[in-house]
Image (tube, rainbow, N blue to C red; front, side, top):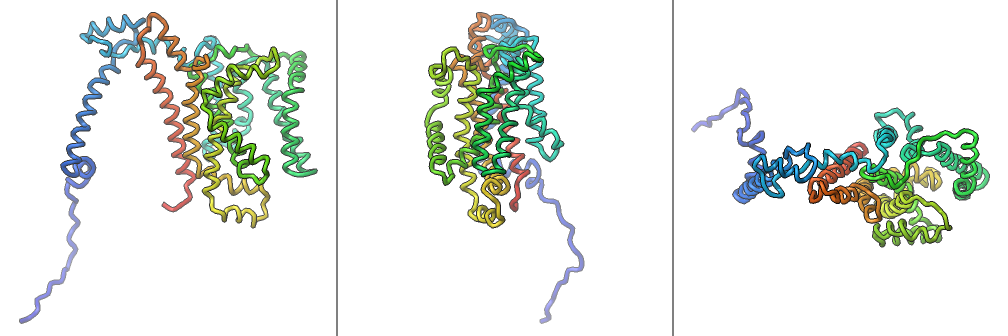
Length: 435
């Protein structure tokens, strides 16, 4: 017998994959109909989603935007053959009161000021959030914006924010002088004391003298006229901006070798984290005035800002401490081998890596703080939830619930979702590992 061999002389052309394995059909087959159990769950889920949308979509698409009261809404829906409390949404309340839900009782002729303040907030945040796409020169405006923001919202003399800015300038000058002559720690203490003395003792005289020379300012607005999302965003932005640096200081203090500094930071963090925020807000609104000199006018919103910032900074400190603990010991040893002092190693090597690791926790804390601003309604401030109660007290809108809460929830979701997406963008941008 002779062996018969076959040698291929040409390559066969590639065949297209079966239509059932690619495209939308392939995806559905592998993800939705992979076996009888998954197929049954898919069909059950589709039926459930259909039932929900069949009831929800007609309710949302209710033609009641021009209604002036709940009774008018029901008349419009009855004319369309819809009966019952859940026949359709009464969007007339949003059409009539959406400005109040955003600005509270802020004077209508001054709406341009909060609008300008929040537009400039975006300009100030741009070089911080998108440093690779925005000119670095804008950082100068970002540094000045914390003094412009309250002046636009509250108004009054322009020398107040200028005086506050001068406190930081004086503190920096004293720190620089003492740091060169003595040590870094003594310079920090001296600079802080100089700034505090300026703000508490000398600032009032400076503002009074400058007002006498040149009275420059805009119409003041009382804090009790603040409300709605303007109030929530104001509290959220200030608490978020101030809690991050304060949290960094507390996290470093908790890991300090100085016993007094460490125990002070540990005591502060554990106390604040062990007390509900609503308790701190009650302290800010009622008990704090007891410990102040008679006749002291301590703005209620300022008290709330301080308490919310302290509350957020305690949680922020623990998030950042987790990032510091996640760094390998070699990073600290590498900083020491380069001859860097403590602050240089923290600024150039340790803290950038710790903050990158902590991004998800930091953003989660920011989102939680922003949502917690709704608690101020408990102490009488008219945030969106507080205003919703006032709106429902109107006889025309008595009985409205889902429309108001749905509108408020939608706006909160937009802000929180934006922060969440930015954190994901920042993680991808700072990713340095191997994929």
